[in-house]
Length: 342
Image 1 (cartoon, rainbow, N blue to C red):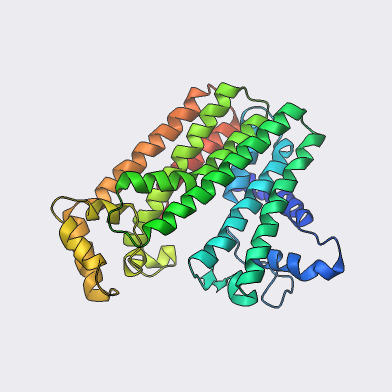
Image 2: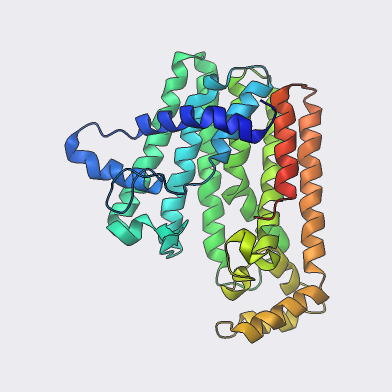
């Protein structure tokens, strides 16, 4: 396997099977509870009939398996951890949708929209617990101290996720958020689980502590680069490729990196803050915001910062001294994230 797509084609069926086993109801009376999870994960439709709906690319668990192979392990040695990180990611999405009052995700109604907020909270809580329980299967393949270390990495990522979400919600109604504040939030909400995924893979592949640290650094910087590219696409991406309306993040007044750079810019910041403090945007205001961001060179700033984090991610991979086909796939994946247009 020489590409991420080939690796995904080989291991996604194994991952999906293991995830389905993790959310199998233990009693028929609990079927709805677990079927709602299956709906969110793309395996059920709104009537809970089997389907294959868009459910994300399972990037984090696949990176976990790749990192395990990269350091010389076998991908299946990290399978319980891969299941755990994907279930954790989806638990956070179920709760995020409630906290953000989002009616849809991936062009389908969100869990809370179909079954109500109380059931959605409980389903999210259940998925979080099942994620952690999935890690217990590591004891069948690994020594106790390695399993304990895996639990610590996982729990640290859980804490960081909630910290990042706290800051994200706190920043929604503030205009005095700095770029550093934003990047600190991203390190929790976006990069923590990605960094944990590759570090878990390296740990379970038998890597030493120094090598695990390099993979953590790789994942953290990759996550930062990914988020910044996502922020660029949310403002300047092509609608036909991103699937979102042009400048969608501006219309929703989302405070992404380019916007925060503009809000704090000495020349255009005051004008931007006046716009963002005003009523909901129409097309005319969107055009004004775009013009001000152009004057601040916000796109170029964001692109340069994404490239900087990408270089740090690749440097961390190189610092491991590892040469393997899986390592090459990780490097190529990082390159593709930087240059993606969707």
